[in-house]
Image (cartoon, rainbow, N blue to C red; front, side, top):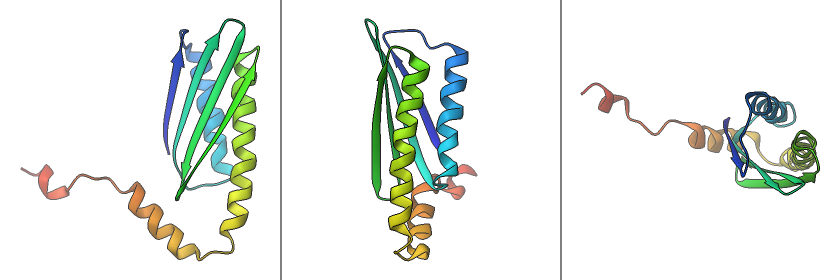
Length: 119
């Protein structure tokens, strides 16, 4: 899974970055084939916002958490995406799993050619 964490209007501490990464990594318990996760943390006066966008298979899911504490905002956004992933996984059980794994393999395969690296 490719993770991107962006902070707007404030300095992101190492502790907050680690906490956000562990929260996002926890999403793999609910759906293991996550392609990418983008977390945008923003501060406006006393309001802290966390916007999480997750890309899976052929869909994107997003959620926003707004509280007076950044850690709580991250948790709220992650919890919302967890429920979306559970619902999505339930819908996928009716489809053919080999088709899904084939598309995921294509999306996560590196785009570099091995023959080009030898030159």
